[in-house]
Image 1 (cartoon, rainbow, N blue to C red):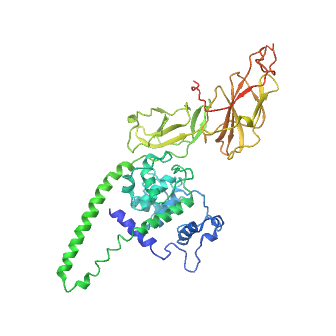
Image 2 (cartoon, rainbow, N blue to C red):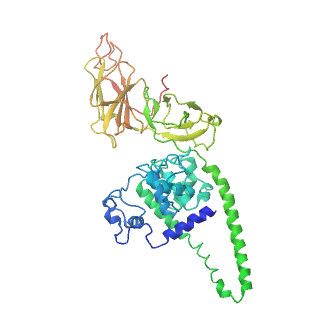
Length: 498
């Protein structure tokens, strides 16, 4: 309870003051939103929030003329902002950190060491686990909601609150997001979803920090009566009643605060003890197109990876959970490709120690990529019996930069945002080495990730039988030469190929 009270007193002193505590020297005129070209189109109300935080020195631009509205902020930068916003005590003389990956000589993030220690001491964050803070890591929107709520001293309220019913929010963060939305610190996206796993941008952080300040200032009337007993000196001629009043107030305040804080803080450790997320991974289609391969996943020394599939969101495990206790969904060792039978689908990736203790986890949602209209491309016969000619659509879908092609032995449904791992392709011929071959055309972004796709199934008549298709050559003993009949792709899912 003392920690919560200390944080609130600190922020009260900082944010209710008209003095620009974090401002620039008196002889330098403070910047405003008008100094940054990317803030000129903000509405007046939003500009006022930006002006308040910029003039207070809490935020600055990424250059003299650009604020960096949609730039992402890493955890080190957030630690500094949080320490300033909540008026935390920062020891600028600190040269060593309680986190193994926070170093004062880190050229990029070493400046944040004292701020990181301050937010840890205040209970805003405990790091990502394994004694690490991950200063260069991204701050997701649900993490931002959690940090802002904890900084307001409302950790207990969030963890006892019924969470949002939103599949885009991790289980551990649902209560925090619910309270952040209720307090109007943050808001849902245009689609009505919070988007908890998306990275928070600088505009979200600034507005959220501003709103957190407003919430606290609005709660200030509660502590203001405290000075009321100050007129006690007036009652000097009657010391007896004064002593009678003082004890009456003290016991009232003490038991009220103590029982409230004690039971609240005790259970708080249980729901928050969830393992940190696995970061830095990428997903790529495997050899069979219908399988997934994890790439760029690093683990702690001696640790291994386990994976599970489910048709429902997979909950984040608690710290200390042994992987052997998880029976649903079924976990297997990650040592190759993962066949995905259906989409949408969920994949749970677990990092475990030699003793089987889960130390990190990520729940990955796979949703179907957009399907390319079959009328926008054309498949015709090629230069010989073993080739077909594919003419790609005239325009790429939004977000895509090029076409790629692969082949499969079955019709597939592809997930959005997964690396396609195909060959770059423009309209031209494709070799057909198998009569059952399916051509998979994908529009991909700069990272090679699927934006939209078409699964094109050529249907050929048997040799010597035109089958109603005038392009087939009757009596030809070789592979049939005919114009394929293209079946438009759809959400058809075939059993996995062994």
